Structures are given as structure tokens and as C-alpha cells.
Length: 199
Image 1 (spheres, rainbow, N blue to C red):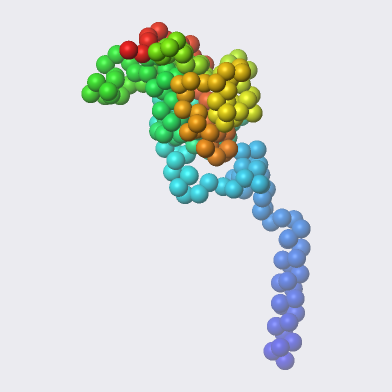
Image 2: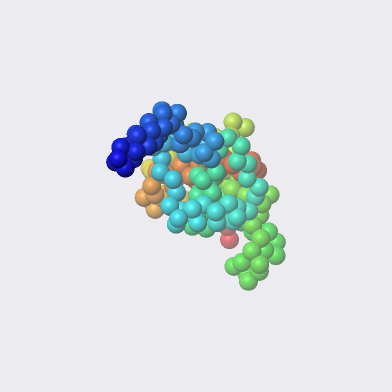
């Protein structure tokens, strides 16, 4: 007799669950906190180590960033690469630091935010760094993402081989890291070059 009573309850429970499965019970819905636009299904969520880099990147960005329409994780990761690993400011900001804010002179670091990543640094031999801030269309250096990745991979821009930028090193980065740099550069304000030259 106890066996007979258990089976209908188990069957009722199973049927109840079966009716919920087609409804999705909220899994993967827009209310779940995951935005399909920023985290497509085929892109894995960040690991704990990458999450740490993303959050650090968002805090070390020296200028205000605009996340509207952008992938927050990629922006944070790109900022980490640009500002904590790549040393992009040292060549693409002219001058890199404000008066009284040059760490190489023992001063507290103050990045030149007015010309941040706007290029214009003239190197020996006449090579001038490129403005890599977004243009009026929101494209860093006026490049599409594919063109930007091509520059990082080949060192070629406008048919010329870049002579100062360490593209042979950057070309070894993963595509995700390269895309993260591009996404970060899309998030920063446009700036115009300052005026100074390398000693």
C-alpha cells in the first residue's frame, strides 16, 4: 500500500517539472542578469583571474570612459592591457606626464589626460606616434576593428611598416586581448596631440 501512494506523488512531481521546462523557468532570460549583447552565448564568461584584470583596468583608466553600447568586460580588460601592461601612454601621449607628474623624475605619477593617447610624439628619425583616440565615428585611429587587428598583427599601417611601435610583441596577443584594446580605445574621449619631442 505505501508503494501505491508514493508513485502518484512522484509522477505528479515529474509532470509538474515537465510543464516548467518548456517555459524555461527563467534560465537564460533577459531577467537573469546576462546581456546577450555583451556576453554572447559562444563567448565564455571571464575567469576569476580575468575578472580581476577587468576590474583593475576600470579603476586605472586615467580618463573618463563611456561604456554606452560597449562591452564593459572588454573595455576593462583593454584598459588593463593599455594602462598596466602595454605602456601605450609612453609613446602615444605627448608629453606622457604633466609638469610635476613624471615618475621617471621621482614625482608622483600624473598622466597627461588632456592629450591622452592622441599621438604626436616625435621620435629620432622623424617617426611620429599616431593618434589612437576615437574619431567622429568612434573608431580608434579611424580604423575598423579588423583594420586595427591587422596593424597589431602585421605592423603595417597605410602600407608602411611601423618602426617604433613594438608590434612584433603585440602580434602575439590573443584576438580577445586585441579586441579588448580596441573596445577600450572606443570608450575614451577624442583628444588632440600635445607638443613636445623625445630628447
